[in-house]
Length: 261
Ligand code: SAH
Image 1 (cartoon, rainbow, N blue to C red):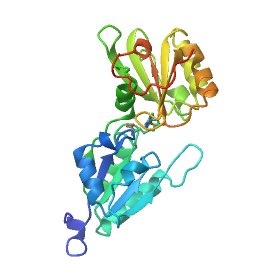
Image 2: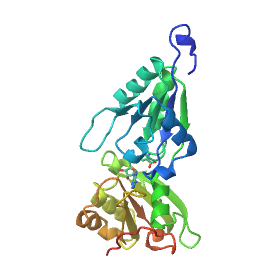
Image 3: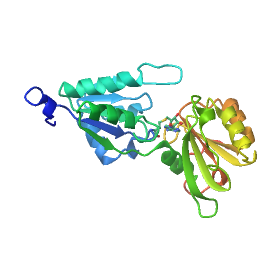
Image 4: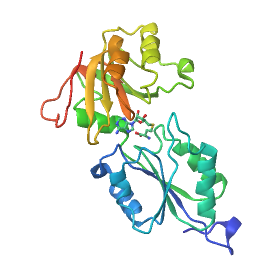
């Protein structure tokens, strides 16, 4: 706990630890994340955090879910920010546990700003982002001297998709990783083809990367929407677009389930 000038003499202010929980497999937590999860009295977590990771919490820890999904918004971001600040000002150190890395499409930046603005100290513990987890688990190297020398991460959710400028992010020698792109797979395909990408560029869809039931589905850009619908791919899933998606790295493919198109 840290004394903050605005509160000294009253209650000590708690610290908010923004902790990356990685893509799912508890073995992929950092040691620091595991230590904080195992000692926290209060854990505020997303829906994406795997139950096996929450199981590492103390028996007497207070677990607060702020699960968000496209269909179900249990808590608005402002309310989450307010919750973190309120708990910390009440003197509780807390772990704010997020899937993957807190600063990759995790809104960790907004939460850190809200805490700092309220005089609440924040630490950030990086996590293995879904792209790294999916790459390792599927055997798809995101860069490869023969196939790709750049890699970009984009968010494919509806809001703002058409405003996003992805030109130059995909194509020869480049890998594009799309988070949250399932529902907009058809629009993503149209957007990339309109930007000049070949409909034949390889794609891979990785569902539940590093988790039980992981699936890897491969095809080409023109068939992306069909892959998603025919195989009823569910969130969480990542889309990888580029030549690397067609390469297999022998020996790493511990649990490839399917290959299509
Ligand atoms: N901060 C997270 C991303 C949050 S956005 C990170 O760094 O990974 C949520 C999106 O991440 C999901 O919609 C999905 O596209 C992706 N994602 C998270 N976990 C995943 C997993 N185990 N397998 C595939 N995609 C995953």
